[in-house]
Length: 202
Image (cartoon, rainbow, N blue to C red; front, side, top):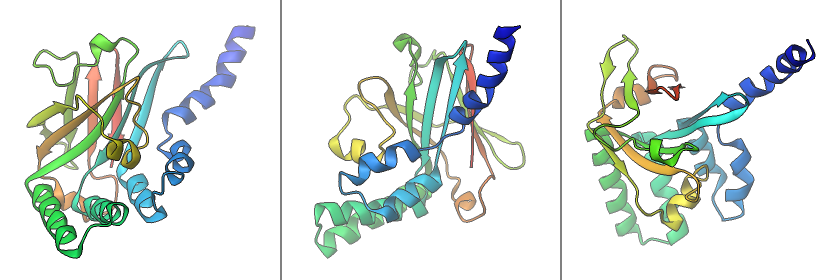
């Protein structure tokens, strides 16, 4: 009976933890000189979820949708921090805009205690990744690429990643650009395996 009461008390805390985004990391990145404007854009376009089993983390996934709106904020922040000349800044912004038109790209960080199951980029992966749009149509990724090395810029611009524990990926889908101009909640991204199911809502 005591165990049941304890579980009931802990359940809200578990649910709360699973719904957190990147707030715990904000102060850390501010110390690195990252602006409030960029952090607001990062917060808007990032989703996170933790799946627990017997109070232990089974999987933790955070993903940032690199739509044109987010990438404008990213490019502006990159240019500010690196003190880019106007011409180079414009070239970088144009390149990012073109890439956003061609694909819906997500920067994804995945932590799984069993490192061998953190294999999203493998043909026979433990995980199935897909998007459901607002009509319920399923959209499969066209590319999942693992970052073998994490740069200082990536650690600063995506503060939720921890290169010592998890793995970061670039996941590309056919363009979803229409969604980024509408209100939030028009598509869902799923990561599914026997280890758990993660649902991220935009």
